[in-house]
Image 1 (tube, rainbow, N blue to C red):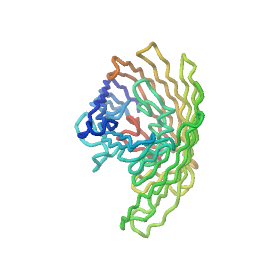
Image 2 (cartoon, one colour):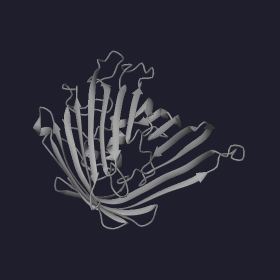
Image 3 (cartoon, rainbow, N blue to C red):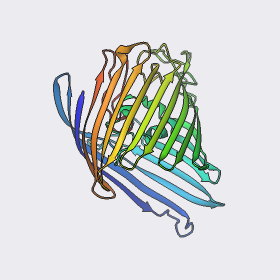
Image 4 (cartoon, rainbow, N blue to C red):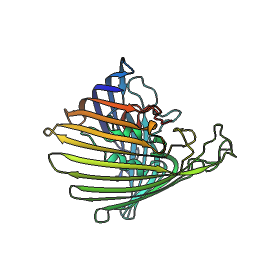
Length: 352
């Protein structure tokens, strides 16, 4: 499959005072968002199709975030973020008003706590080590085509992020996603995760661990058997000035019986994938993004896949940009991956 894109990207941020701003001068709420629409031409199996698409280098979204100073350098914070499809106005996350993020927390010298629907440490790793001029973990990157999306946003979770400790940031998460649902195992989807992120000048390094409970049952019931799959993410980058090089490797183990990705049961086959990418600036407003990566399914080479991408981004102002590019995925006989939009897009990836 080969896909070409010509697109426009717009972002906005509008500060708005709280209703009681005169009484609480240190309180604020910001309305923000982005709209990313594009024209796509794709060829697959010898057939070409053109269509209007959305959320490619940056997810189309809108949201609110707020902060209130409660003294001693501590703030109460929150974020509510909605994802939508700019080409037709539908919600990107089914049956969720704020399906991208929805949390409340506290921030201070101790770090940050967030409770609700949070991005996982793994997702932050993908964002940090897959960058373009206009977005991150986006269209054309191999890992964006291969990552198991249910491992990157988790509801009913508690996320802690430490302050910067001489370049090192530590994160930890626990999520109880069952929440008393009697139609599925009580632990289904539960997550335990931890991450380390280190930066020093142009150099950055990351290591994340995540475990997630899954089941292979075709019909969910409270008595369905469960097991635990483990994700390990390793990322490294260096900015040489003339180019910023990023590399990422993600390993999934603990699910030898799983044959294909199933979002309902949080199941994913044992696999390893990598993505090597480069961002090459062409001046203060433009940059090329190049990516190459492969997915390797353990025990079945017919489930392997190769991905490549080339994109050019141009920022016409602080809030508006355009991009164009070509990307492709070559699948083995038992793989069904596609070129995805920003942060997992709307396409489901599988390897059967």
